[in-house]
Image 1 (cartoon, rainbow, N blue to C red):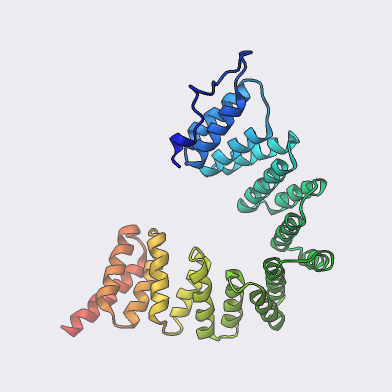
Image 2 (cartoon, helix red, strand yellow):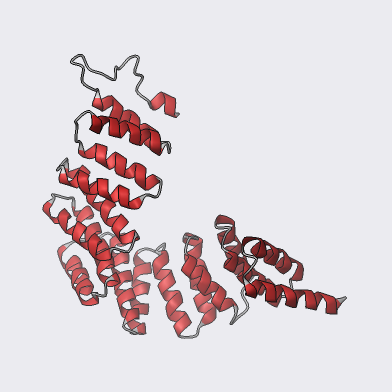
Length: 323
């Protein structure tokens, strides 16, 4: 169904009621439709029209917040999510306000703020699966702020108090593995990451954890394999891509690894360092023309990146020697 069909037709449903007041229900619904189709500015103007009429609705502030978030204006979005929570709407609306605000705080690096925001959720009546999700998010925040002991206690309580789904268990074991690796307890971390995957084989973070353990143990082929498995589930992991490039300087990677690196580049074409890394792999394999093609693309993005220039110089020298 297209946008036009989903909009409430103002000819049949008037924007103003018989008493002269704005038909906020229609405006809200139409604004939501515009937002759904990516028209953030139009949607926001409609949401503000509701506020300008003297109304203060939780869902209207949520809509404004989502419109700002759609445009990447995270702090503006968070401000409206916080306003939405203060208005004390329905439990579902308040939950959305808390979750969206905490997620933004976490994204911009205010992890302590995200923890404080999540505390507000304790006052709400929430389904068990939502409560579990909040606790797991809190665990992630605690780990990031260096409170590993508190995180472990929270996970222990989680296992005792709730019947966890396989996905929730997978996340909990992943966090335990992450804590163990930070404490240099590699055997424990390997065990926890493996338990995480036993509960959810698509947990790409656990695969990344096993890749890190293998790398630290200098098992580079194993590490590359875990990295490729993780990236096959979620390609948008720049840190893992860089780790794969680092491994490429230590061992020869197969065509699957090169294909994965190229896929990442196609999605994020401004990553000239990735292009340089692919070029280096191709250079080491003697695939000179492919390497030159990658290097020229990298130079177009960043002409001043010296490693690219040096490798191109080496390639040209090699080709001259062949001639």
